[in-house]
Image (cartoon, rainbow, N blue to C red; front, side, top):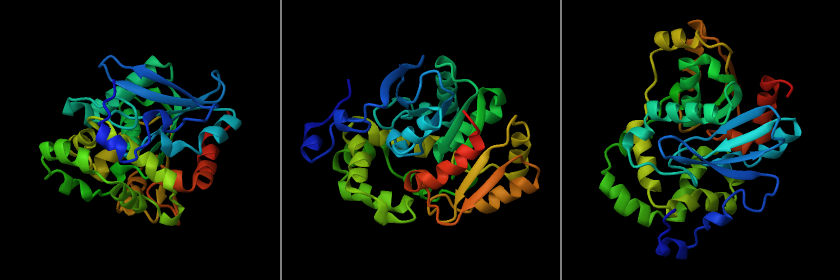
Amino acid sequence: MIGIPRALRARGHLAPSAMFPAGAPAIRVRHVMLSSGVTLRVAEAGAADAPPVVLLHGWGASIYMWRDWFAPLAAAGFRAIAVDLPGHGLSTKPDAPSAYSVDGQVAMLRELLVSERLSGARLVAQSMGASIALELAMREPAIIGPLALVNPSSFGRVHAVALAKLVSPLLVDATVAQLLPRWVVAHVHRRVYAQPSRITQRDVDEYWAPSQLAGHALALWHYLREFRWERTPVAPMAERLRGLEQRPLVLLGARDSLVRDARSYAAALTRAGAPLEVRELPNGGHAMNEEEPEVVMALVLEMLGPA
């Protein structure tokens, strides 16, 4: 049972039943329980027997990030499958900090793909989700098919993480979860867009809604503490990438204000022999897959090939 403090609901949060994809009959929602006891919310569209495309969001987001991808992917002949990562959206918020480490997240993704018979599926992933997908691909190249990475956090420098590590978990659990106002969420959301004027009131409501759920703020803090945000040096990273069975498409936003210096790192990797196809979008922000879905999706569909 998901805990929803009454005081928070009274302040105007969307009820879980009203969160995306509520009111979208073409999108099916179900919950997948893993062996760890973690339950993941999964949303999908398209024919059940169509080639799957798995969509993974970044830190602090949810399946809402992919709202404009379901119908076009289904129309292109694919089965679009978006997942709320642990601690996000309406998925379980694990208590164990280790669940939020790279190893914990890779194990989660691997089990999901295997248990849902999605091994070899195409993956499109953003930011932290892109780092999780790429790490699994480097460990087990055969388990992931064509891979598109949007502003992967492991390619840049994420400076805000160092400050978050100084905050006590007791403060997060007792204060942030209870006092997080809507305007703070709106302010953070504006930072991930290259053109903040595109953000709607519904967007802010959807991103604010999970903060009413017990354990949400603490889960996001655990990611900041436990996930590996530092870049791997170029030489060992290039060596690992050379073991991939397919060349990932790496899409970088030139106006990404959160993951810094990714372009120079990607260039150094390719010079070192890493099999990457790197494309930079001049007007792309950190969440350009959400902000400009048509532009990003066109590049991704080109990479994915016919269904």
